[in-house]
Length: 73
Length: 183
Image 1 (cartoon, rainbow over the protein chains, first blue to last red):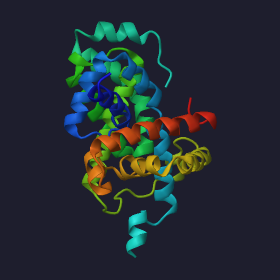
Image 2 (cartoon, chains in turn blue, purple):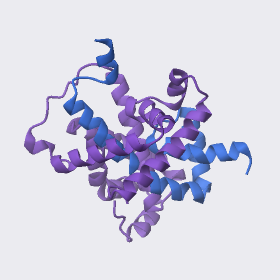
Image 3 (cartoon, chains in turn blue, purple):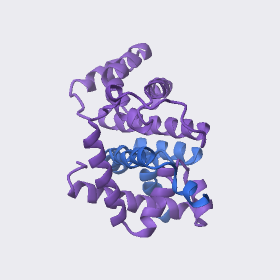
Image 4 (cartoon, rainbow over the protein chains, first blue to last red):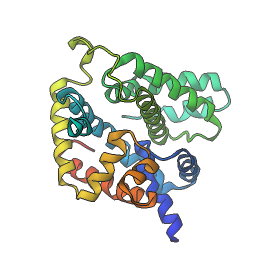
């Protein structure tokens, strides 16, 4: 496996989180359509972002601001 | 989400007719997608409904190259919805939320105490990750930043951010699975 193709496979996590920059997002999506390995991995990872949202919501409910806000006060 | 078996054939037959496809997408994925998105929008129902609508529209626009395999389609819809939420949150910026805190009746998505417990377990799991892994998760997803933006802030190449995120998210999923909150 070439270094560049390994990189593409690793994009699956950033893709699942929705944080790839637009160009990479498009590129990974094209790759995804033909890579069964990435498809399987995407299915596996797809519930993680929803779980991370629990932390995010918990913070916004229980804290008055983000870490940045507090640091600047 | 549980993916119904009969969906394969429904999506298959929907291939030729986009209007039917939109209908099928709404019927099969609309409700679970809304539940998911509401978690990300902090229970802002109006916003969540807009996100679901936009997600379905994008699915329809991409119908030609979309995977009809339901599990993968679901993952695709989640990713698209997440990007729309992130974009929306960035546009709203640091402005105080315009939404009023929802009523207790309106909130339960799911049960509040269950969600609080989940939040604790996930927060704990994040602490069990290596500093490098936790850092990239924090600076991308949890702060609504793209890989490129996080790379700039952290002063590391985008490829490194993606790679750490990959191993970090896998490690996180492993821990969450062990603790019974991920399947």
